[in-house]
Amino acid sequence: MRYSVISSKDFKKQFDKLNDKSKRIIYDKIQLIKENPFKYKKIHSRLYSKVFRIRLKIQSKEIRLIYVIINPNIILVCLLDRKKDYKNLEKYLKKIK
Image 1 (spheres, rainbow, N blue to C red):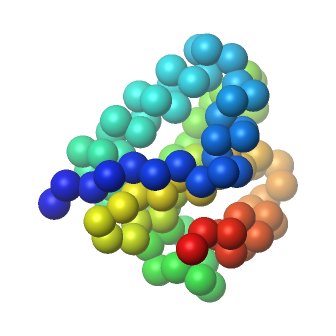
Image 2: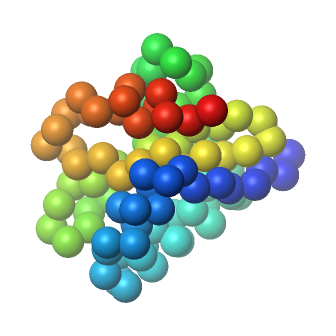
């Protein structure tokens, strides 16, 4: 199945703040998501059943790229800081409609 990738407003804001090297890393991961979106670890959410995350090390920080699969779209939700322990995840997911 062919998926189209859509970025949320929160993801765009976070992505724009990054340097070029970090943007390249994320762009490469997005290309891998397009090939096989179910490859990465699934995480639990109250709102959506198909929520996944990718581990990234960007600017010496542990970051998670969170995305949701809603056929036929892959929605890039946000970049979560690992230190926050996914506390803000549901807040970001509520903004997706």
